[in-house]
Length: 332
Image (cartoon, rainbow, N blue to C red; front, side):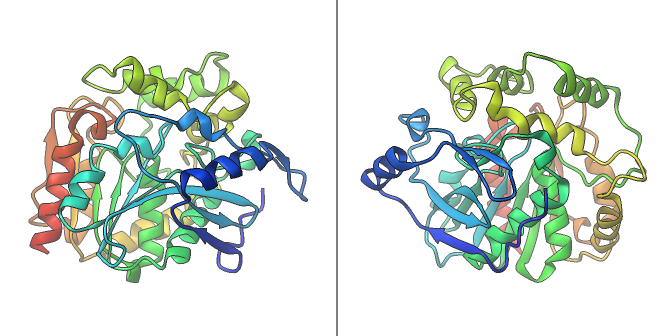
């Protein structure tokens, strides 16, 4: 698909009330076909009703022909913490961290990437690209005019977020990476990732909630597993989740490699605070912190840590990750 023209076609809908949401739900076209022939799905709002620990009002930004959802809590004039989730989660992943940031007097912004959560979902795997995801997040940042950003990113949230921060450095003040990295097709590919990519490509069974549960040290409740399943009422809605493993640039001829290598070089000149907090039980990214610390000048002297957590560190140690982020903000 063509990257969206995010700068010229953005509209923000702040805090839709429940009555407005019911009207929107009744009128929405949940199976839309855009002018370019791209089919787009939109999950019914009813699937997000009464999620335990996630009673946040929905907000939306229109990016070209697609609607992106985001949580926006706290003082709108306060410095923002931008939390980017990865595969195959959504902003629900940050429910344990949002209150910590709000209580610290910060603005907590957690979008759902296109294809996930309450955001629109192009129905074909080929509708997704690395560049499109970068452009969509840039569109959100520009639509909200976010500045003095503290980026908190994990998994694909870091693949997108580190690119965006490197390319739009003036809008960012610090970065916290939790189980993330920036691939440049120069790193070896862990066997566990090769298995995951094959599973996403070929398995007829792709149970989102159970996948998240497998990536945690603790055990999710049935309600939490159901919350991760909520955005995906059928397999038709999972194209974005299946696409992500295929979009990781592992070969030098991948179209994302030149921009990623340029971003990696830019991070080599990043002197702003840069903190890594990784999970000790992440078989794919658990040791990815060392290359980041070696590359980024702003990582020197920071209180980097590996804590007892799996891949989804926000589930296992969300409040602790938030606490360390607040400490970084207050110290810098």
